[in-house]
Image (cartoon, rainbow, N blue to C red; front, side, top):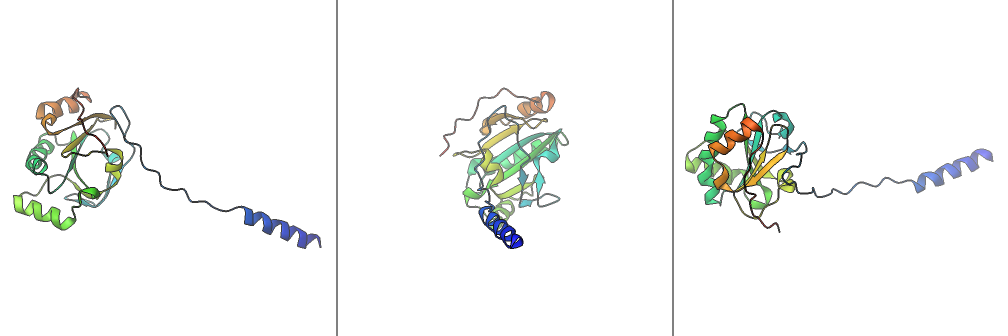
Length: 185
């Protein structure tokens, strides 16, 4: 009788304990001065692997270039971003980040690079959701500047992306640039 009672009590206790899966939470947008979490970029094109973690580039400045195939300013800036990567090789890592919300797919991106006649020296993240959840925007192009310690130091538009500003970032780990005015939906 004692064994049966113990089994009944144990069974009823087990019924009261249930696992609850955590619901994914939206990432809080990062701002200047925030440390960037170890974001993994996936679906990489023109890179040695199909994924990369931003933490793998600690010690280098990082420039995230959010763009789309339908954005003429973005496309016109691609050769400049490629040349900055070459100029500051080993001290800067540029990522071309194409967000899922732009509607571009692998075929459209490859066709664009073929049409404009360049094969970038830059990794291209296709249909990104990770970076775009931390860095929200409504207007493209959109640039996020991250220093060698993984801290966001600027969020800008296209005109601030100059060789002199990138040089200041890689030398000193900061830049003093106006923040891009971008109302997030």
